[in-house]
Image (cartoon, rainbow, N blue to C red):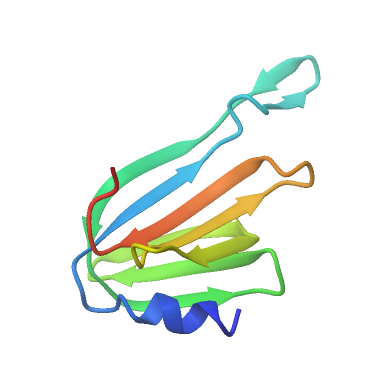
Length: 110
């Protein structure tokens, strides 16, 4: 967490692109006899945030404060700064399957 916080802050007050995704589609939880699937997906959302924060004991929650609201992702377990200086954060379930992703980049995602 102490390594990620400065990386989140490096994008403060800049126009950045985010990729935010939650998924349980293929890994849908079951309630009783019926599967339940929910998810969210935003790719290349252009935002500017004034504050970014990672909290928790792990899995972690990352929040980005924008002028009129917040973006957050909960359940973050992994992160990396890739060769393109994009901050890639993800949360994986106990089986290693992707549950949530929050990525921040100065350039649009391909």
